[in-house]
Amino acid sequence: MKCHATLPGAILLVLASALSYAQAPVPFINLPLVPDATAPGGPDFTLTVNGTGFVSNSVVNWNGTALATQFVSGSQLTATVPAADIATASTGWVTVVNPAPGGGTSSVAFFTVTAESSHVAFTLASALAACPRFSGGRGFQRRRQPRSGGSHPVQQHGFYLAGGRQG
Image (cartoon, rainbow, N blue to C red):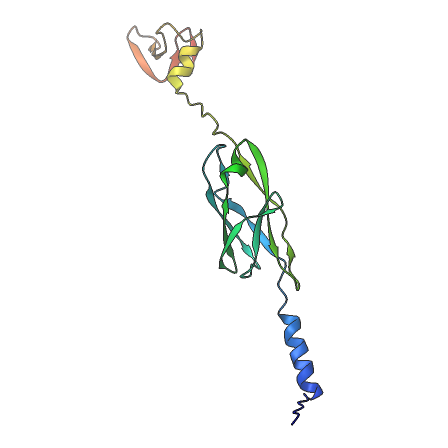
């Protein structure tokens, strides 16, 4: 006994429309990546990519190579970046790829692998000590002037730089 089933044309049209909506969107990366930089020579680390249009089988790429990727939500993915990819100072480029049907590749987000920069800090005292005009312990002194018509000095509001210039 043979059994034949036929679907009316309206049902096929609805089914075809439903399949066209199942296409993956083109992903978009929001900056910053988290973390946004790391030092060279470090261990594997987890990179968090925030954005839109992520699907359960989205893949984070590092310089064009797929990373082990975990889907967190439609707006967040995490991926493990191997230590070999950050062994030396460089700039990595990160993309997210959504598979077909639909899908595509996001725009590029850059990731810096660089040594920490040195921070230079100084205080007013150290800056003045480095300047020959103000070194030697003279620094700032209170300004005193005699009262007009009198012989007793009166303190003015303000300071002058030792050496005669008013500050």
